Image 1 (tube, helix red, strand yellow):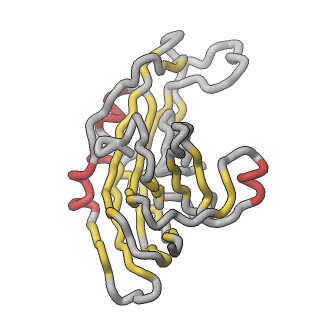
Image 2 (cartoon, rainbow, N blue to C red):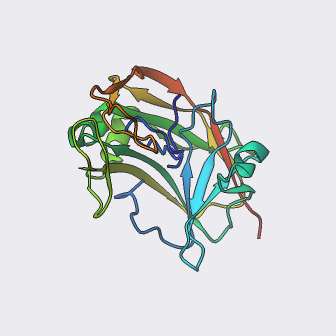
Length: 226
């Protein structure tokens, strides 16, 4: 099952890697008045674009750009909500997991490419970025304090995260989007143990994810009118 929240954080994809679809470095502490848009969903699984924000009370919220009653009823954030016009819009991607080397290799392994246009004027491309150009927008891999997971060879091991961000600034009201793709140069491994309760016997071999390939993910999001 492929997921990127790129968020798709949550967009929570577990390759041992939480694929969700961001730091500039990806904000460990999210900032208010910013819409963190994860356009890198897998249309075979995620049909909606995820964005997240921090209300003034400091509690990060997930928002589905397209209403999806199944996801919302399952506790995955709010339903449909447009981005407030006063917000900065930042495209983001994050990968989290173990081992450290796999996460540090993401700028070369996970290639992102996209273009962006106002859908009212689809011939007017605002941003177009190749995978080569996008590579420089990755931050560095970090190991957040206190975040560890059991693995196949350790009771607990440090989790690592790396993020990609591109700040679009404030956008005029309208619906934006375009084609996008994420490209895995290699397959992935997961050495974490996610089960609760922990399995008996304890697993001793990594899980392999054969994700090598290119995955198109067209996307849209809407900035509200005043």
